[in-house]
Length: 195
Image 1 (cartoon, rainbow, N blue to C red):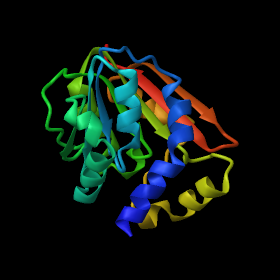
Image 2: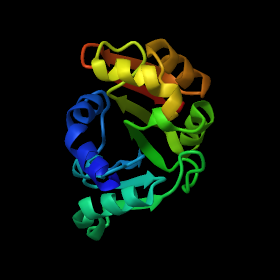
Image 3: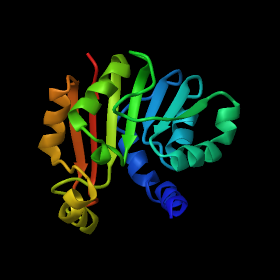
């Protein structure tokens, strides 16, 4: 079941991921962290864009780490991608390591959104960017989003509306916070910088 879910993630998320990533610039020399890398498809996309940099993926699921490694075997062999087991709540990276941190379809599962956003803040370089991309959020005008809202508390999801995303990032210390939505698609993209 887990492998099927990971395969579906790789098939289902590319459009929303591309849309979200279009709202930030990625330098070819960037050092990037993808939080909750799941099936690993976003890692390869980021590695192609940051061709002179390095991309790290982290996930709390051993199955996801294995899937991401299989999906990105070529990039890993080239030294362009590294995948680790770990938690957003205690990232196994040094302070100020990443120019960009991405979180695609994952932040609503984090154990403590505010504290976890502060942990991400710790590993960002000064001027580094966090980008959160998701296809469900509170108030979106889609069947999927309405279903997620109905069942969120039972399945451990924390869904936020546009203003709550903005307020959370500001409270966690991020500057230049922007929240963009495609309400009819249920897509949201939130970005913030470490001053």
